[in-house]
Image (tube, rainbow, N blue to C red):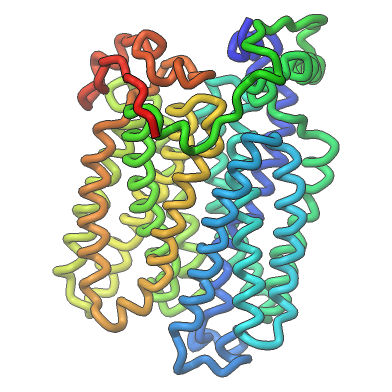
Length: 477
């Protein structure tokens, strides 16, 4: 049997997966606080005179660009980490990369609370971004590779809900503490909670082990899963796909040796870029949504939850699927952005409603493309493809970090940028493959051969045109 059949035997979602999901969800809850930390610790505290931030301590009132720069450095670090650790995860395995990067993330982010100048704070945030990116990308791939394919949608979307809850928690934590140094230390120290689970409970990904030819090791992991799920399975025999010593290690360049994979990767990367640009542009401007900083941050997190939960239905609806959901939400973001250009600055309620609507749709896109991306690419390229897409997304996040500054100088320009990129991303979505109810590709040949992604009723009735079914010919990089 192959890896997918093995999950049918040992249980694709049982007691084992519930425990694993709880650990990884908790980690994402903690990562979220680091991703948006600057909204709080970089605030000018005019809405709460009791809040101390880097602005109040280092006298940055006339240097708004500093806080935007620090956030962009964090995102730049995340970009570096996603690529470096993503590639390492595909070569050395998911578990060692997650352990190392998470431990270093805790240290770097904790040290940011000890900084004696904004410059040293910026350096610590850059390194914190590197290790957050390295851990976050690998951890999501690990989550999907430890559950059955039929649970990917629900697992992936509830994973994103934990990110939203993390943002809301940060707002409450900041309101309770109101000291930026302690906020930095507490939010990072929470990472210690998940380290025992990473080390003692979560195994290496059996899908990764199988894809690199470590069949015996993969079988042992499957037996462990069966035991935890109380399936009474005494033997799992996987079909060998090659000897471990002779299984080729794949890199990003392999995606560009096949025209179809290259087009998918580039198109998907732009979708990630646009989604991240909107997400962090809107999140970093959360303080402008309401006069109350904590309420603005909490609302920006809370509005994501209904979006994510509604996508559970949309993604599995046969007339829409993953691709259709992303396409429609991007068009809505485009329409909302264009509408916002014509709303007068005095219309605070309308601006709040449009801002939250755009954030709602964008959060939905983010939750879907995580699942969608892992379904498109085969196991040997899955982490590096997700890491590359996430890397490009950080470029969008870096630009999004300066949106609050741009809103002061040229208020309408960010919405023109949001609208144009959303429309182009929606069009590029149409070149991506349909993955709803399709088998998960284990090899590059599986991904590019149309006979592997067989057409079914769901594809034929899709709201959007099906992908090109011509066989992809290899294109040398």
